[in-house]
Image 1 (cartoon, rainbow, N blue to C red):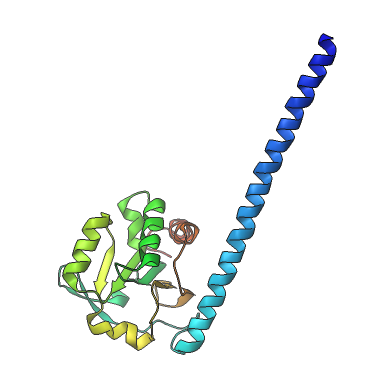
Image 2: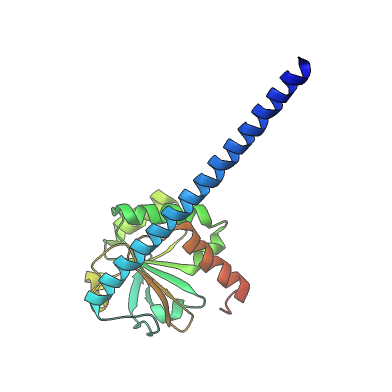
Length: 198
């Protein structure tokens, strides 16, 4: 009787382990499939946006532009590109932009990680200062006066992200919010290349 009970208990434990493993692997497979679909949709969306813009493409050199920082200093974009850098056009009240900032905060381990990210907005300077303080993010945020740079590039969707190397050569364009893995890739590639040498 005890042997039979032991076999039944062992069978239950094995079955539970098999079911648990199946659920875990099934969940991971579902997550992978969902992530793959989201990436495909994002790429399709970006391709559609770029076909309407006809201003920039991967492989182009991003035009230079002079911005005002949140302390009212004038700065040339080309002077900020010491690394592989994300340039993101955003609005503080845009849901995708808020999500993107949250993802960025999840990835950056210290204030040095933020040096690879530049955010540009045509929202007034005071609102940008308040937004940076609200999120507590040590980001480099620049004011695009009267949307001059956004208009030059024909950016009309937010967030809109451009990844460039230190020479301003466009490596990637994403018409939509980035994910944690995108931010991680930028930080990691800069760290592999060495600070200031990417």
